Amino acid sequence: MGHANVGESNGDVPSDGDRIAAPLHGSNRSFMPAVSQSDTLLIDRIRGGESDAWDELIGRFEGRLLAFVEARLRDRSTSEDVVQETFIGFLTSLPNYDTRRPLESYLFSIAAHKLTDHLRRQGRRPALPLVSGGTSSGEEWEVPGSQRPASSLARSGERKHLEETALVQAIAQLLAHWRSRGDWEKIQCTELLFVRGVANKDVALRLGISEQTVANYKFDFLAKLRAAVRQQGLPEEVFPELSPEAP
Amino acid sequence: MFSDVELEAYLDEALPGDAMSRIEAEVRTSADLATRLAGIHARRDSGAHSLGDIWRRHRLTCPTRNELGSFLLGVLPEGHAAYIAFHLREAGCRLCQANHDDLQRQQAESADAGQRRRRKYFESSAGYLRRP
Image 1 (cartoon, rainbow over the protein chains, first blue to last red):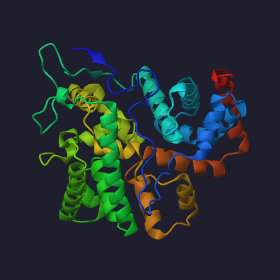
Image 2 (tube, rainbow over the protein chains, first blue to last red; image 1 turned 45 degrees about the vertical axis):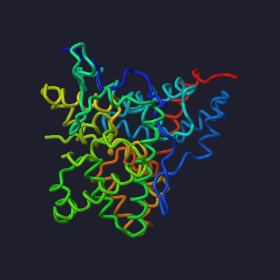
Image 3 (spheres, rainbow over the protein chains, first blue to last red; image 1 turned 120 degrees about the vertical axis):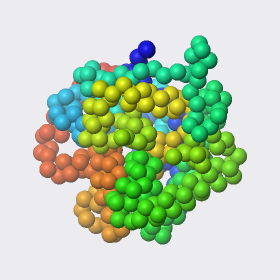
Image 4 (cartoon, each protein chain N blue to C red; image 1 turned 30 degrees about the horizontal axis):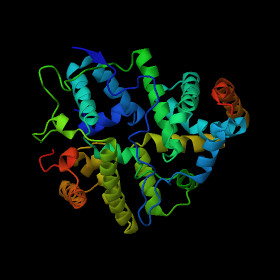
């Protein structure tokens, strides 16, 4: 079986090609802001070679990047080295950076890649086996709960972008609605289920609510997303978690 | 047993440090887990969307840095503050935790220490700036 560093960095910084721009904002939303004008101007100055602007960017972001890396490595000196590589990676990738993407998120994604590279070099993060993806035998990966092979999911980056945007809008609207009503419990429940992957019964324990309530929140959330996907005329099979057969 | 959503977050280096280390330790000895991870990666590569991936990428529930500062100062309304505490401790958002820790460290650290690091980063990277 071949091996590759699947799911891990190849040393390059992430591509912006298939990312959409800033997070979308619903009413009463106070989540992460859209791309700030000051960040855009700062990037323009750095692209123009202004060392003061580069110094300013370092000053603004190095502390949070160091905290991110150090939380994992538990070693200040090595963490500083990884942050240093992150800044160099940012400058070398600058010609490809899409300024519609929030600067902080972009820097964190580079730091995560550099961190992963470091852990792999240390032998802490193993390479993963290659899985079938259109082999000579014709085997292909399939969406769980679907009869469609991976090849049938092939579509343009623009199409994927539209799908993702539609889903982001639907989720953001739900979150904004819950927030406007002070319904923090629903937000917490949904986040534990779908972002942390916590099982229903453990979510119930952590939030001090019944498993039935968790199941109701989950059902309601998925039903609303399914409706949004249908309304937009998007293919449901590209969202495996929305399938009624999903676990 | 790790859930697929957790493993996805692992591939994105998005779980809290202790959870990352637990999976890392197990994947070194478990071929089954390594194969599961590779399968998840292939599924994403093939174009399937994941709610957790999209939620994280767009930081749909991340507070702003200003809000984290207000949280540290204890000046947010109760419900909002409780949610941010949850987001940091229970949801384990690595990026917000990094911002939170940075803000906390700024209060404790001497100006010299931060200045030394910034100088080091600048000197090692400024050569990569494009000159017009």
